[in-house]
Length: 277
Image (tube, rainbow, N blue to C red; front, side):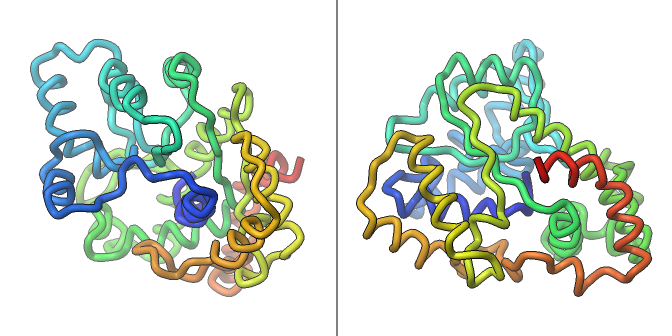
């Protein structure tokens, strides 16, 4: 789920010895990414939207059936192209992204045989982080959200709608969460909670963090030495990510007014209930 600690999860997986399939190590690869050439470095709106192969296939009408990539600004992408991207991921590597559950997407993931780490977080923290993120000048939705009052921003983020400036259809976080949590019905999916993985530096528990790392290891069939688990827990909290802001549990309590807390909690009640199970 976007704004749920994607970088935290990939940092843990990196430290366990896996390699990011989308990592840029050379200037040419960075240039290709900016131009939308080759495979997207992450399966999310911006990278998939500007991918030239997707655009050409769609324009030529030869893409065939599609599936959505990204949960708040979904990009319809030919299944055949997504299959190509997923089949290219070699052993010992991973590809991150924000992909809503659909029957077609689930069938593709099963066919490719990938394991799926599903990162989630308290939706109220996701909401606060999301609004901060989309109001940054470089974000495609910044002018939409900056044109709104704080209350209107929350409503658009939670319920979805159409951007008042861009006219882009925006999927609200309630629907986005439902599309992500639907992955729990699939095999080879492990739900990872931000609150357990963040550790003491993020106002969490060291014991819970260690348990979460061990569960990830078991899921991906690793048997690391205890010293490696120690290092993962020590170094997982990384403030160097471009999307890092606070990285704390319960930041919504400091940033939402009492009335906003009540409003958000009521609307996120089914999600909060499911995450508590």
